[in-house]
Image (tube, rainbow, N blue to C red; front, top):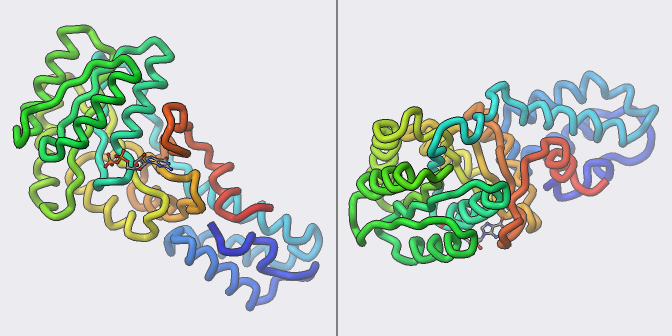
Length: 289
Ligand code: GDP
């Protein structure tokens, strides 16, 4: 979020002057929106600068909000969920961003729509991660499958996809490893999992969600680039938006990867996963009106 709500960056009803524009630009950059999106928004604001005098700062907010909304709109359509059975969703991201929690929340929302799920713990190095996922599976009444410690994640995934197919489950949500210290191996492992999924189920993974923590800042862009090299990321999940962080860096990631934000995480409870609304997000980013 901007340190100061956008209206307060300028005072009085007068045309925006170069110093105002510079202050606004610096605030947007400090919110980690990324240079391309900020430059575009500023170009539009500059063009409208003289008009800001009339309707005042509210006009500036609506111009910026519209530009942020546009920067977050990508042409890629979201996939038609459950158009294949089982519907396979690979969830990737570094440790601690909220992958396991997001899977639990998604499974819960699908369960409430009458969809059956199988939750697959494919991080075979972190026993705690698998245990967390199992707890979520119990809470939402989903199936759960994990591998032996140190097992090949692709083998665990294969077992999970076969089990889900045999039991006629609607969806498989796959929790993957996110350790950063063996980055090369991790990325090779994720690529292999995506290939293996495609061999087991036509078109799988049908969605690959990259989970980003809104409190991360510009480092999220580096994470996104790295994961996008290994797997075909189709959407983003932005977690921890319930705190003070407003996730400006997600604008930069959407611009870079060209994929939409699909969901936002706003807490640790089952129903704290919401569909993404670009307008609301842009308003939040610009600070309280
Ligand atoms: P993983 O390592 O990526 O699987 O991350 P986890 O799902 O284990 O989440 C790491 C921590 O972040 C846990 O304490 C979660 O409860 C917390 N968490 C996840 N999503 C959110 C969210 O949207 N808001 C808040 N406040 N905490 C979250």
